[in-house]
Image (cartoon, rainbow, N blue to C red; front, side, top):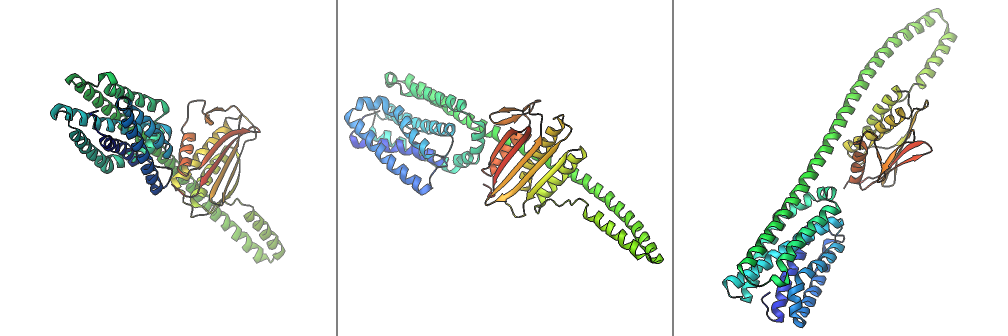
Length: 432
């Protein structure tokens, strides 16, 4: 810090606070509307700048030592409360904002001291020159990259990772701003430069690492869904072949029916013909109706897996009240229903019971879709963080269901009730 009047301190604080808060806001998804958020940032920023300037006026020595590090805590708490993101993500963005602030301060102070004999206006000018490219680059390049990958960061980042990153930034800040090491020398300049450079490399590497991991896992899930879809299509082809055989059998039987009716007519046995037609009508009415509901995707998925379950002597009861026109993607129906139905079939087969049953209920209620699967189970299911864990591993079906449901801001519940394994799913019709 090169000193200066109250107004010089006010200008420096405006540059520093403006940089950190603007940088954070560019990479944030706030709780409030953008208009209200900007007003809150402006009011808080003005109070912060004025308060820190008063601190400088009253106790300049303490301000020089502790203002930089304390600003991280104060601005970090405010921005975290305004953000709708998880804690770890807010910590990460605040760490990057503080790093940008540190770069501007380091360049401004040391350039002014090294070449311009500590000129105050050179310090301020260099900070502005550093701040403008940082904000332009953030708005035009980094913002798009960050916001497009923010969901990947949320999926991949945990509290440990965020704390590790924050600790690395704090170590860099402590070394760069340590009160006893702020004397001007080539060694201190090189030390601060190397420290800030390494912290920047770590942050940039971690950002790309987590986004890359998130994208890889996302593509892996999409690949699993496509494989599941392909498997469903194969089973539908098998159903079509069975339907062709059934149609051929019906045509063959129809020829016999026509011949028999002709014989009744030739012989004039009208009473016998009426009895035969009544019997034939009852047989037609008692045949199974394959139309489960009005939604084509759901109807197709449930038909295929219901046929598969019945082939394994599993009784299937379905109460499905859905129509077309829902904003739920067909591939998401596959992820939810196919995985749930397949897990139900597996649960029945591994239950060891003679009587095996799957009950399915799906219905629309206002702006929600309610899904319930209940299947026979042996009751020996291990749960971890509320999710069932396969005996042979974590399994992919349940995570796929949970991830797909989260796309619609829905909820999932897995439980054992009265010896049956129950899956309850709630979806919002509007896709986010």
